[in-house]
Image (tube, rainbow, N blue to C red; front, side, top):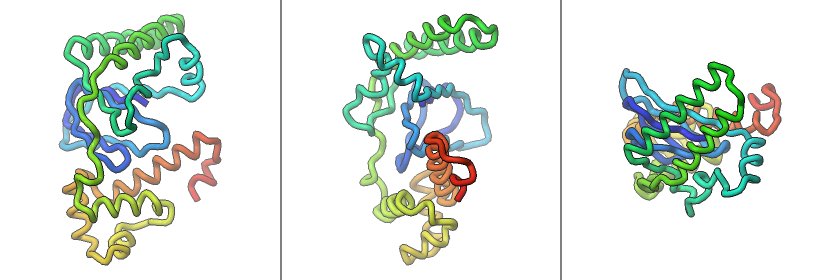
Length: 212
């Protein structure tokens, strides 16, 4: 998935990392990752979202020059936040609007595909703006909570269960979690469950078995 931030006041969470957003930022994510926006105030949040199916990925990987290099060039999976300069970002938005127009007017598929290939080239030329925050930047209790949720989310149902496991009060844990991650602990647990459910559905599991 590709998330292209245009405007608004929203940050982003990928797995257990919090990312400050700004215009020109582009995030790359894989299907098994928890990712969600954090809306900081009651305002419009504008972005482009591009989802690439497994079949499309395989097709692109067969093309000369590897147009999906923007996903894999980074040496570390933590380095998937890039920043485009003003000119590159402006060109990227024009290409995305052309793709929208192709879809609306039901133009031949090769036109939209050509625009998208050019967009991938622009993304591949972007600069890694900064590393996503590591767990070490957070209070140890928050790092421990994130690890605990990651390993036990399927059996957890309430914030109280998490607080009880660490022998601390639920209000205190909720407060420091929200201040550190800019998202509520209950909401983070829910998003983690949703991200895992989406992965199971993509793998062919039924809705009923996924909800168990």
